[in-house]
Length: 546
Image 1: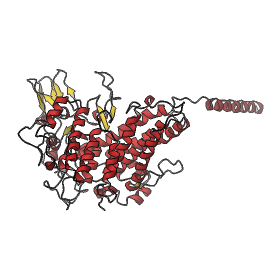
Image 2: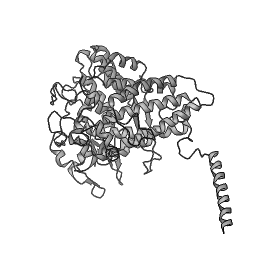
Image 3: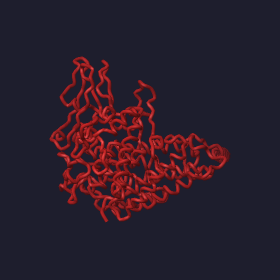
Image 4: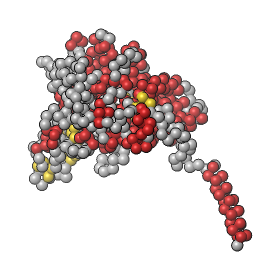
């Protein structure tokens, strides 16, 4: 018996040793691990997962900025966000999508690319690292950066947004250098893995400069704010619709019910989502100080940005917007349903047309949806339009009013071009009295409200509102005369536990529960008040004057 067991042990040892050697030389390139995937195999997932987190952060942020509303639900995440309250569900996904699905794959891709002298992949990896950490620093204020990927540390320390900025801006400069290098002979072409710019290296270089201009523009409250540095970065940033970085989503078929490849904003904006009155007022120039005159023209984007529902006679009526300064948000708007049998909606709140497109079985259009949330729409990640509005703000601050006016109008033009508005309609609108025509009449509010429209569904919308103090005066109180974002008031249903004072405004998202549950000691060191209701009205680094 002992001989038999001994023989089996020898055979088992031989078998396992042979198996290990066989596995060592036959790694499956289609199976995920830390070393196998080639750069062109890893990059598509990095880009898709980044877009998921980034655009999901945008959907959450624009409920806070009151672009989007939600039907009443006392514990519903998006309804809570309109109260300026971020719960765990709201805070978690952008964090998870970045750290778990995206960031951990970037350095392995860079290392694999370096071995092949695939410098374009190295450059793209550095851009994505800078972008992800930068926007999450804006979102949360603190996050692990230095220690996040150290396998020896399971409770990484948190870094403040100030430190993160000191790292990501130089990282963008490094990326430009890598992208300008000639690739090695064995290097894969960038087009094999690039789902954003389809291998256009010049567009990636422009993206790096555009992100640098974006991050530098956030610093207007800090002593390091440098208008000339922003303008210098803008010279090499996207200038047109074609140079913009845009993620094109794919609807698999016209009739498929799958959302696997659908636009993030289709997935994120359910049948419960609505538009706000303020957003409609901005599009239709119905805010205090809006441009107007004898040649007013409706914004051509109105039909595409505002959902419409079909009346029984076949005409389409636009949605009205939810007014957060009215009592309607205390109990509504309520959800509605449609009966093909009676050809009627269940209640009067059907005037708030749902954001997600829908057609009834009898063919009646219940909602046209919006340009941003059709199943095959585009994700506007960084555009030439945004760059022009950044330029307009900087020129305005420098007193260069004529250049500011030109950039303001060009920002509107590029956004409309991205949306495929007809050239004649664009020119007609830009020449109308619905757009500022005289440089002396242009205000920062005019610039930023147009940027707000162009940054629909973007987390940048909330960054701008915070760094420009919403619509407040120097004391922090709402002031429609001096404030930038006209009509953005404390909502009637504001979460008073977090915002007890009239001068309290939404400044950061709550920390993700992963860190609260498993890294609370490090979190407490970086943010002693993270578990207080008022934590979310504490300004992050660049939101504090110095």
